[in-house]
Image 1 (spheres, rainbow, N blue to C red):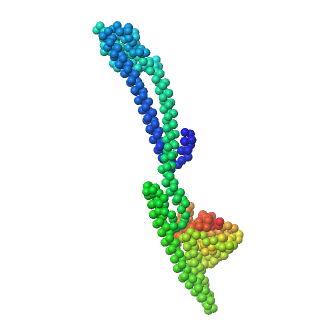
Image 2 (tube, rainbow, N blue to C red):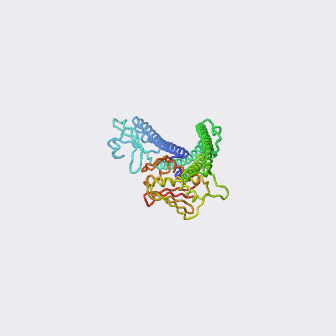
Length: 440
């Protein structure tokens, strides 16, 4: 039983169906065995006492009837074999029996005297020579209490035996009952990410588990259809966007080759070229996110974030001219990343762009270390309660009046999860924030 208790304490009683079945079996067995033991002992005790009392009463009634007809039989017969029998009169009762016996009614009684228990049969309805005669039969049943105690111990032992058998039966029944459910869980765990999933319903009978398997098949098919449509849509959009972006890039190159182009016109064309490049990178990166695919650089090729950061800052030059905000780049160590340039560019563009957008006055400091990049701003900042929400889709800082969809940091977080990078944003010593991007 100790082993059973230790096993049960390790089980999750609130969620495990198996534990509920076992507990139900044990509770039912405990209740049934207890009720059976109590009723058996009670019925045994009642029948035993009642049987003995009735026998004594019948013997006494028969003897008293004969005695009333022939008083001489008292010298010839006993009231009941091996039982104490007393014939007395009301005036002599105190000499033969305790005085309280005079108050006993006809029938049988269970009395306790001097620590012993007696069954007493009483007959007061006969007379001899017109004098009332009372007959009493006493039997010591104290020995029955010790036998009852022994019986209690026997029932207690049987109770624990039945409880153990109930536990073993509960284990067997629960395993049999939960076998189809375990089989269903196993098949679900072995399903691959392939869009063509193996149907579950054919492996089960048309019972409750079979209905669950059929419902899961239907749900999986709907999800599969949705994923297939989504992948096809993303592929189509990516393909269609590449065509106009290619046209823009080729047109920009053609215009830049014109020797008569002015410096002002060249600056505008360069802005168009940077925007086209960013659009191409963003299209490629979003397609990777939609497919949840990691596109690694081949062989020893690496992306250098330092060069990307300078290009990003140059792209924000027109915005920086409109407010008293400066940028500072500090390279504490040479950093290179094993990831596509487009992915690194999208992540850094969002982090640096947010820092510039939310800083109305001050410096945006970009720090490159051996394995990380930190972007510090002196912007409006956020409260501690807002920090965990910054990566939520469509969430925008409450203090800001700037326009935006609130998707930039959500995209950054998804890309970091895809490439096992770590992104952390916290409040810095100024009013702004510090975003630290750590590469794996």
